[in-house]
Length: 205
Image (cartoon, rainbow, N blue to C red; front, side):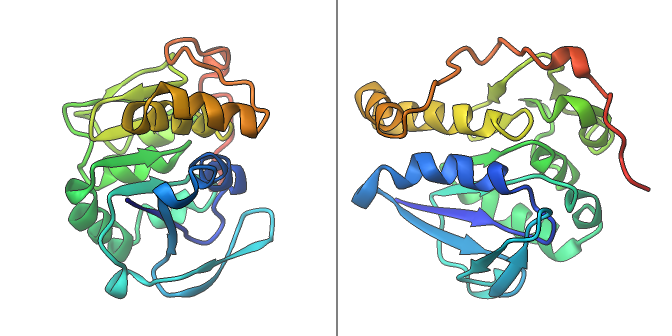
């Protein structure tokens, strides 16, 4: 099984690397690859760079897709290359996961129409404005809609990743990953302690 994480400039580091830490603990059960519009260095919003193994043109087949959010989401909403890649690849995946404002990109690509989804609570309208046909959940740590699983802000993606691991690989292995990483798993997808912060963030112009 192969998981591809899609990177773009100014992505949020924990959005990507929280879930990747969980999936990486599966060892040889999964292959992790990194993808960006062009192969090479991609800067996070905090500065440290990630190396993308592949560009959109030569990315391999993907069983799982992980799409982080971050301040870079705003620019990527106008990036037709990314949106086209999502439209092409996500429907072919077993599961596509988004963290934080990554769901805004999935909504913009029309991939969440008719489905339940969530996003970062402080910037909820950024995502909601990208998809009028999405059933946006204002209070949810993550939402599992089957092929598409969306999580709330930043750290919520790690809880979502463990839930997806549990679904695909079983509860015993998910527990092993949790213990190995010494992570306190927030298991209740419907319990959202940050829903009270709805739209209290400031979206840069």
